[in-house]
Image (cartoon, rainbow, N blue to C red; front, side, top):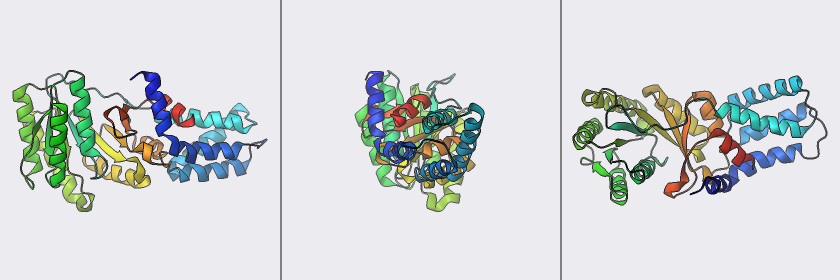
Length: 307
């Protein structure tokens, strides 16, 4: 699909967040002739309501107050443009591009996140995208806790043409991961995507399990995993940020995939993730289709959001 078409779709799918965040900002600024403390107080409410997060909101407002003083802003229109600029500045740091190649094949990606975040679907969509790019892909079904996860991944395997390594329900996830790496090396595939369990209610066990998966994989391929992608559901707002913190304690997360952005009015959490965790957003999900999983570009995202 053409870039313009993708931008148009992104703009369309961000409509709920745009109405909640940008719509409220426009209403706040509309008809005002000057910038005063009341403007900043109400802007604080709007940003927190859109799940930008308290800490990130305070940081944004401090920067905007300083900007208003230094540049001599007198109108809300100038403040509106400054807010856009500040959002881009906060979202740009880090490497947002996904590199799917390793010095020696296979390139291994570990996919983590809580159940219900769209983790397994994301693994399937990524496999389909990589195969469409002419790459040989293998899926590893290391979420052995949830029977539906392996079944779901098997459907994606059939649909995309990716191979799959899976064990019976309740098997040791680290064993699945080891076998998947072993098979990926033997078959000479380009990419191995490993789906993992995400049951946060047994937080300690899950984190130890993830560390074990990583340790065991490295016995077969010392550099693995090359990417650790954390899938978060945008509709969970600040809860998603708390979930992310738990995963980053156990793993060196290299990037975030934020799904279901089309279904939420609280897409402001994307700014909080980037600012408070310092982990770049790599991909965003704005719908059910494979093409609705899009690379994240900070400026394009903010332009689409602000319309």
